[in-house]
Image 1 (cartoon, rainbow, N blue to C red):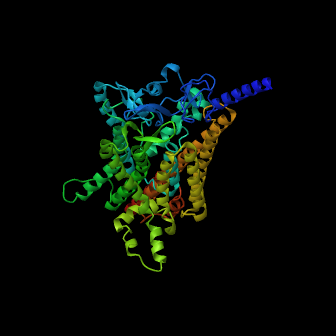
Image 2 (cartoon, rainbow, N blue to C red; image 1 turned 180 degrees about the vertical axis):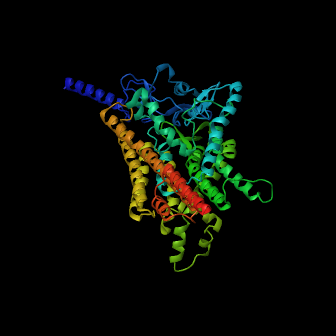
Image 3 (cartoon, rainbow, N blue to C red; image 1 turned 120 degrees about the vertical axis):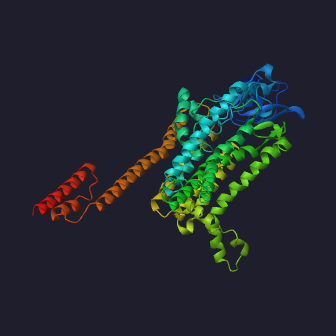
Length: 582
């Protein structure tokens, strides 16, 4: 019995070590001789064999200014040191009383939730994760010029291209693609929750692969050069919330340019300014409407991202997993009710949130009309939500590709962007599950209601949403089975499938653009040729010349066309010469 008991103890120890390697919860598994072992469930625990402390990846532990006891809280992605080879981070014995420094210093951070950069460092303006980079005031002055040239000049070029060429981004063929491009580089990113399976599968080539799809997709978030430039700061005095506020200006810059251009056009009659953006005033007005709608579409997802970042709190818990404090997610040294934070950051963010909610609600006014029409009694206040004539023209740029009784789908597409960001701040498995429910619901709605006028566009959107659903299911599988950090055959198979799926919409866009440009080129040639034929003198032409011209009108070969014109002019001159001689 004694030997059997010893064997059972050894087996139990082996099982506990396996559980520890797999990153599962170690509640009640520590040895009895482990003194001062923290009891924070799976967030902060002990190795049952060596009694070394272990902290779950992406978590911070330490003291706050108002509480001297040991507390634990979740860090923003990229703030705390992340061990990509395991679910836990091992804490040396001499660092157990300085866990905060151990977790934060490797990312050049310090403080509560690693919310501050170390002295001599500042948040990079061109980093999605607000990485701390070395910074000094002398170089920061030059960086302001570099920032304007690398961010606002490309945005101004994009503004000119869209407005001068009257590019429409709210049409059916690119509607679902733009939504896919915006969410695949933010909320559905393959590295969104850390523990990157891409890094495990591709190793040294992971960064290059990630940039290969993030750079083109981020163009549709007005995030043009973030992944191409080395990280740089603007000032050591700027914190993460200041950098997020600057990103508001980046997202709204093209929209502000459209508003300024519209005001100049209104003042054109009363001043000497002449804006020859188009040959006709109607064409110029339509170009402004389409451009305004395009930039709202491109900026909406990024504005949602920044707004959610600014208003999200994080809970700091004690050993009983009870909330002790609420802190600002991206600035851990600020309490959530801090006066400075509320006035300068939280209040403006809530104003933006109201505006972001109003846009999809405004696009949903058609169902309200239908409800009001079929009610037994008329609701007067419901009629007041109908947009005015001018706003209705603008909304038509978003809703024109849908059937009249399905125009509210434009609002549903905007609402999906906002809902995916709300799900993004839930725990990982809950986030992936809610995202899957939302995507599946939209697939069902599109398939059942067929909202587009063109039936092929319904199948196109279903295909793109199905692409997102498969990627999300694979991410859910890797997360639920704790395989995001280990190089296994299922992980490599999932990454290969995801790598193929993530590029399919990009291939579709290239094919669509080539077809669109080719079609536009042939239409221009046809228009030019038809105008040239109208200028050919008909009087005096022989019947042979007329038959040649009529038979060749369908050919758009420029050389052959010039030959026909020369032949017709020669025959005309011969007839004139014969008439003069007579």
